[in-house]
Image (cartoon, rainbow, N blue to C red):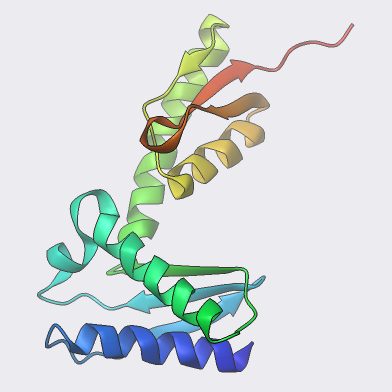
Length: 153
């Protein structure tokens, strides 16, 4: 695993150097997830992209490079300037409102389409509050339906 972490770190640093950005990437692993944190730079907007699209592409490229070089790992997570961390915190705040609405009304709620990382955050929060959450739809239309947990007779 240590070799995979070092490879992923160097891969991202080399990729960033193509954009003229020479920076140290902080790399750790936890539960088979390689976490790569890129510090804040003048290229944050470009590297993150709209709604994190460019950052997810960097993550995909790194994951693919690891697989193509026969490194064993389950996931790679790239975060630039704590974007994902801050986004998850904002999402948790919004999700808490959604959970309250579903609990108060008792009615299911269809949420807007989300990427897998955002859906994971909402699923975790829903479970913490005793709600049922289900991902439905395909591709860019994949979203979560929040429901009150059904009482078992």
